[in-house]
Image (cartoon, rainbow, N blue to C red; front, side, top):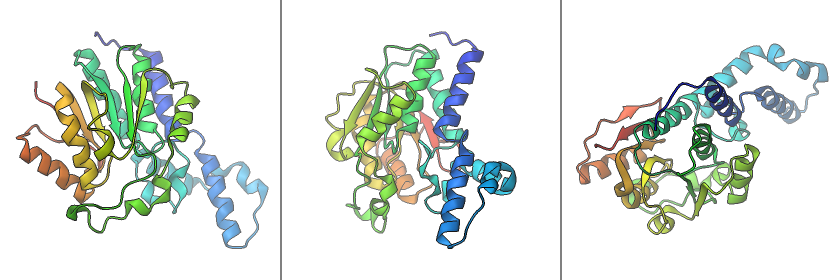
Length: 279
């Protein structure tokens, strides 16, 4: 497939990124946080203060905007990062666009798969990229338990408490609705529901061009790589979202070592990495 520069397509994908990150209406998030903080402190607030909050709280707005762009929502007040449809940040969304464009340009066969989707933002963006390039013969596979992360089951994950974080538990209907918000829910979007150990070995996924992992845990990462890695086409890409989490990094390193995978791991930002399966 020949890829040519297209200003309209670029503008659409840039707007889609900003929408998924909720950067366009970040001032409303700031208003909500301000009101909640005043209520918790049992203090009043002036409506006029909220009108131009980008100016009245300009420094905080800039900090929040940068944290969202960086995909570093942990820098925001507790509970603040729950309004966007993705926590990936700009660099990891850019990476999805670049790698999908690469497999399209080079005709690497296969679908796009995300294992661990939260509110669906990464998968929505994958579908948006296919739509922008007018691709009708590839699917986006949206794989998740849709009920949060499992409790630790292997020694490597001992002490991890992701299963206690309620905000990570997003049901499948919410994710479907989020796709619909962008007019991107159609027959090219396929859902695989269940914990990876149960759902991925039997998922009807045949060929993969881009495989994106966002499972946090050692076992969840292994439970994705083991059934799906061999389905990645030569020249396809593997993206790991949580490489900064030690147990996830260990799973990736253990899998690569056990399977003789030596392709270079390339950093995306402070947590995301990817490599290309050798041709």
